[in-house]
Image (cartoon, rainbow, N blue to C red; front, side, top):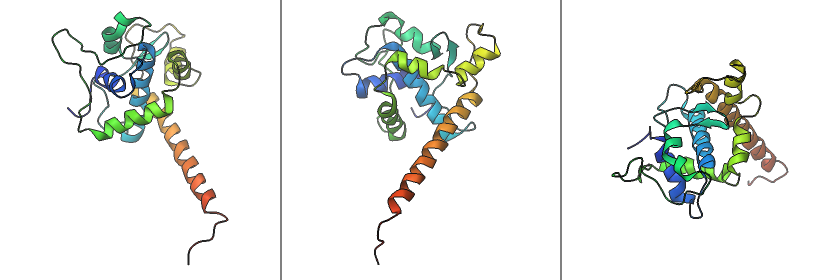
Length: 183
């Protein structure tokens, strides 16, 4: 099952790869959101989405509604294993052969995995973020089930992608200076 995946499948892949000691629900929500945003930055607004649903604006930042309902029973306790959305099904996950998506999840963990759920929440709803833009557009009185527009998410993560590419190019140029080139 290549993209789009359910948000639960993406969260389950974080649990499969990095959940040995458990990952709290809020952190999983934000990791899935960051995965969604970086995917949009790379694939563009006209590409296939990473997930079957987009994030909504909730009190503590972006939330995937179906993921909330799958994990709400855990409260603040760490989730230690992939979960199923129903008692009869196997846990959804990213296809074993989908290295593209699995690599994205590894990269997201490397970039954000050291942060707590609350730190990620702060990061995803600070001033200027898509969450904050929707909240301010609605005077912080946002209707339940309000989606965060992909355009806003793409703009934020595309800016991050461009900044990362500029930094990488600058670093490459710096490594090339002052070194003798082979003849």
